[in-house]
Image (cartoon, rainbow, N blue to C red; front, side):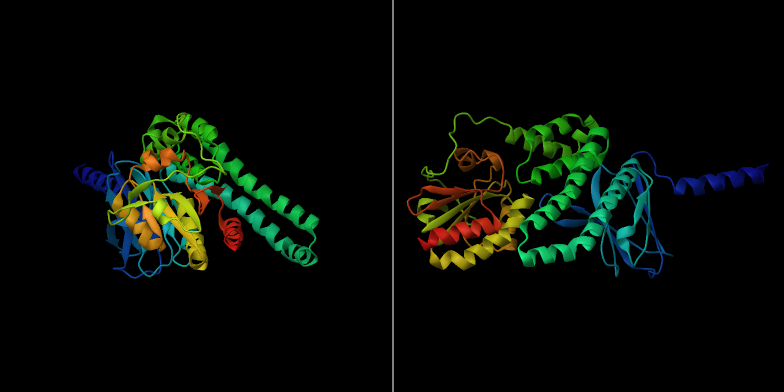
Length: 381
């Protein structure tokens, strides 16, 4: 009997070693073909979009384990020394398991907790749409090339219209998921991503956010969504919008060195007033185009004045250096409460105003090729 009790006790210890305690996570990874002693890094993305390591362990006998307590749910990544790529997953308290193929890390399936199971399900449905899209591209590439050579706009537009249905399918999948999974962390990430559209539907975003469970609203991402909605839906009745044909109001603010700089002293023959922020993904994606534009047209009279809606000076300065923004940069570091943003009725970023030498607004919110064409035509006059 005594022997039996010892066996039961030993089994209990073994079982408990593989089970996360209350308010604790255990992430267990299995990977074959990786030598013992290789480093495995657990990373998280900070507010500036940069990855920072929060824990490191070693591979032992083809396995690794992370243990800790998650204060709140968030996306994390795992990278393994000598293995290309990273494994995204949702870190939350509970037992999380992943089986990794070192040659195809992107097919790693993470299981064990509610939000990771939901992530798997959501990704699988997305992959099904992606496969159909890739098949369409394969089947129609030659047809599109022939239509382009013949300048057959009817055929090109028909193919583009059919292709756009896949994007509509992705959108429908995401919106259906959000409306039916109020307690899933992925729902918050999907809603947050809706702000990155060129013209976000704020009423729709608010409807989906209002439908989330409190546990998701209280996460870092949930709070960020609420903050964005509060700022973007706030009425600014006392400030008249600045339209094409009106004179852009002068303003001044500190540059990264703390010197006050005004619009008046920064104007060129043509000037772009660019409202952006280091945390704004569409802004950062557009910055390389702005850099190329400035290099090409600055000598001909183009100036750029970038007004950042950042709140932290170090993040603003880091983004300026990283994106190589060599023109005039200013900020009051007050987010959407920046007096210049209020003066210009800025509710979304990126937002741009193009003014001529007299300060008159001649165009608004142009990007990419359209912006380049407009600048070129204005400077030719």
